[in-house]
Length: 98
Image 1 (cartoon, rainbow, N blue to C red):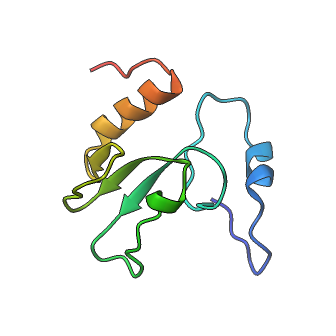
Image 2 (image 1 turned 120 degrees about the vertical axis):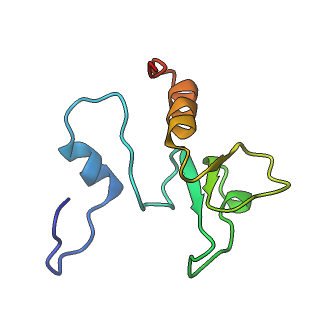
Image 3 (image 1 turned 135 degrees about the vertical axis):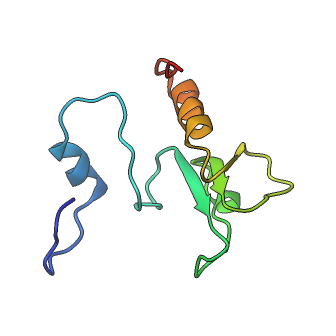
């Protein structure tokens, strides 16, 4: 976490450059970047327009409500274990141990 104090938001590349070597980076925001992402859908969101139909980089959806007719994998927003397992599977990282 970093306070901007009126400065412009850093670019996605600037953020990555600040990180040390790692196997996985989870980010919130930067939804226009061409990286694999999971779309979060909430009933109380101000804008409930789905992003997945127009973003080929969205690989799954996590929602706090039922989502029907979606060709992508859909997870309950609170099912962190299933989401973590999915991320490990699609990235090739070792599966978390139970």
